[in-house]
Length: 74
Image (cartoon, rainbow, N blue to C red):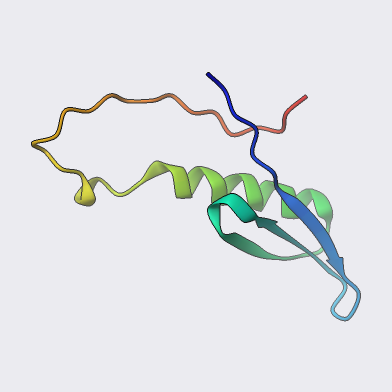
């Protein structure tokens, strides 16, 4: 199974910086000089959001681990 996640990039003319948002994950960020920098930060933010916090895990639950890769789609 695979899914496609949308990341949006936009340039702010007032401050001359690039920003991003990932609507499905409620992620907003940016303020970088280049679109490439914004894309790198966006991929890092997505990976961080998907990692989770082990302190929030239920040790009594049955669980499986999912291998997830965050990279631009072809």
